[in-house]
Length: 350
Ligand code: BDP
Image 1: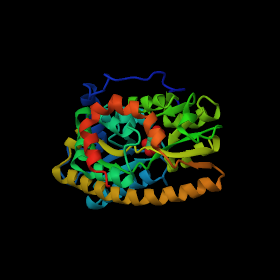
Image 2 (image 1 turned 45 degrees about the vertical axis):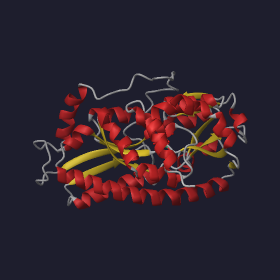
Image 3 (image 1 turned 30 degrees about the vertical axis):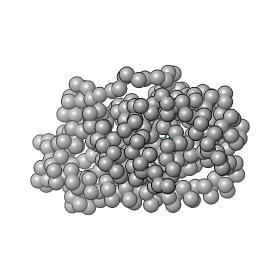
Image 4 (image 1 turned 90 degrees about the vertical axis):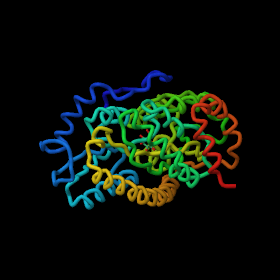
C-alpha cells in the first residue's frame, strides 16, 4: 500500500479523463474465468457459482463496510449461495485510486468508493466536490434518489463502470494539527490534504489554503510529520483513521457531501443474466437503507467519542462567509454541472 510515497505532485488533470482501455478486454478475460471459479464463463442463473471481490478502504465496523457486507449477504441469500461476494475491508486491495483502475480493468470486480477520485474517470462525479451546495443530508438524498442523481450514476458507464447505488457520505469538515480554525480567514496559508479532484483542489485554493492531493492511507503520517497542517473528512473517517490523535481540532463547517458509490466493472455486469442483475440491484437498494441507518447512529456515537478524547470541536454558526469565499469554485465549475445544480436548487425545501 505504500508504493506511492508522499503527495502526488500535481493538480489540474482536466482533459485526462480515463476511459476504459483496450487492456480491459484482455484482463477481463482472465478475471471472468477467476470469477467463475474455472467454469466456462458467463452466468445464466443456471447454477454455476460466481465469486466476486469487493474492495473497501474502511475497517470492518465502519458504516460503508457494513453496507457492503449487507449487500453481499443479501445477494448470497437471494441467489441461494450461488453468488459469493467477498468484502475486502481496510484497504487490503489497495488505495482507492488504484482500486478504481483495477475495477475499470476488471482485475477487481467491485468496489465501494468515494465519488471524488472517480472524477478523473467520469467528470460528472466532480459535482460532489462543490462546496456548501446542500442544506442537509435529506437534501442530498432527495437529489440522489431523483432521476438526476440516477442519471449521474449512469454517467459511470461510459468509463467502464456500472454504478449500483449511493451510500451516505455524511458531511466533510476541516481538522487541523495546531491552529484551531474558527473562521474562514484561518484557512489562509494552511496546507490541507485533499482527495484527487480538481473541484476540491480549487475549493481549498479559493479559501486561501494550499491543497495537497494524496491517498487516504497517507494522511495520518503526513499530519504527524507536519507535511500538512490539516485535512478534512466526516466524523467516522476522522475517528476510525485516528486522524484526531495528530490533528485534534475539528471545525464543523460541513463543506461537502461527497457521495459514496458502489460500482461494478461494466463487463462483469453485462456478463450477468438479467435475473442476477436484478438480484444485485435489489440487494444494493436494501443495503443502502441499512447503511444510512448505520451512518446516522455512527456519527452521533463518534462525536461523543471525539469529545471524550478531548478534541476541540468548533461549531460554525454563520456559514455565509465560507460560502462567499468559496464562490469562485462555483463560478469556475458551475457551468459544467449546471443541469444538476438547477435540479439541486429545485429540490431545496423552504
Ligand atoms: C472517506 C471516504 C473514503 C475516502 C476518504 C478520503 O469514505 O472512501 O477514501 O474519505 O478522504 O470519507 O480519501
